[in-house]
Length: 599
Ligand code: ASP
Image 1 (cartoon, rainbow, N blue to C red):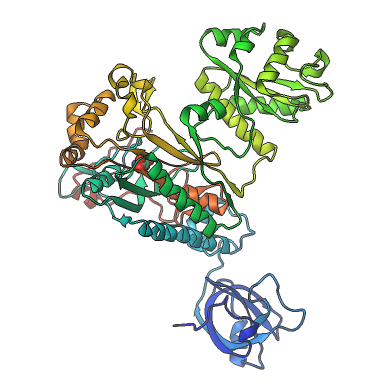
Image 2 (cartoon, rainbow, N blue to C red):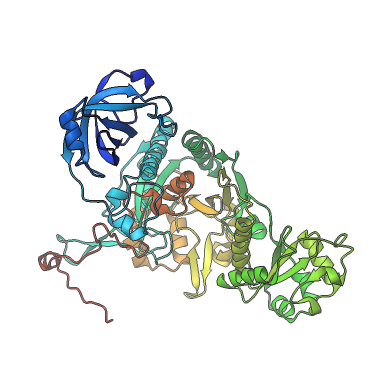
């Protein structure tokens, strides 16, 4: 070894010992006679002092040291002079008085300083990711991520799970995205697809009798580019036989609570996790990814609003749309600029407009509201009685701001749920240390796709319908509720799961409902259907996004912060410059000709 001690280890108790450390020059201060460097390795920083009286050659050489040079130093651990200690550094009470210095490697001046306090443009960080990762914060995140997966391994092993690796070169495993494909050289014209998730494979493992499977699995989805998406992401993927919904949820609840407690002790996890049906979540929060850390729940006021003289309200109500809103507490004094700003926000979510009714705090009560207490662009179309009724239904008080959107119920929900989150941010209602996990369950099994004019699976096609809804499968598929659920935390989807179909006929019926041809069924799912005819046990499981979970624990917004080598928003890797063209010979081997798109 080049070192017998790590930089972060020496303490007052080790004063007097002679040690050898190795690492990177984090910073150098040259006072001529005395040269100081902060030496950095994965464990921290150590102040190293070159004094010609203790090592003349080392001192001479130390003049040449620069940031990020790699060195090995030997010396004696000494106590710092009184008052010269650094209380911010675990090793701050001591320093290393050097006798020998070996330069192991030099470094160019790095493109940015290795510090958590420097703002660096994302592309530069990704191009020099190997340097970016030297920053203490990034090292901390890599370790956090490791710790999370370590606990997953430990915990699930204790629970009788077996880790099984599944292939990356496989066939289309649909999860609603486009496949990444890999051409086969050996089978000209044929392609592998990278798994969008190991869904079919883990179900096959249940037929194999594994009973409890897990994998920290890479999933590949060629999706449209969106902020904070990565073409490949990591999932904790698991599957269990002989279980019901509650059994699967219990595994996750125990595991996730343990992970938060062991990795992020100052975070607060709710327990037990809140449970909401999909219908309740949509009704109260307008979304299936509710942030339940704050109130401002939505209310439907379609009927009341339609009795007003406001044309917009009448038109929406008579065309079967909905009028809903929520109350921003204490915002009744918002000025024009603030309400305009909220209107712009609502429009950016797709709303035609935002109706607000501000109630002055001087009003004695909702009952006692007078004309002078009310500000609203629709005021002349809303009688005082209608406003009182709306305010009562929405639970508003004097001093509050009522925010109302009218339109199709899908649009209204989208706009209001976004606006609700935005208001919570502006009003600083959320404590990021608070992790509020929520199960959203009883999702509809299918969604109607207006463009394709057909049903699509809400999650994926392997989820089982609730037994009591079987009768609607043929008559009214839109009505069928599935045994499928999401785990949500603080407004983000953390994963999804379901009890699966394990019967060939039922699975085939579902394929038929979503319009797969016989040929597509046998081509894509033949192996699973065949397996189902050889004693498939009842089973269910989940896929939970690791990147999002670690980002949340780390308090990071973007998942690229917790991925060692992420890609940019345009699915590009600036470090390797991938994707890239390949040699003509490689294309020839693969029997592939590239036809570039017209500009
Ligand atoms: N395969 C699903 C997904 O990737 C998760 C699951 O149902 O287990 O979303």
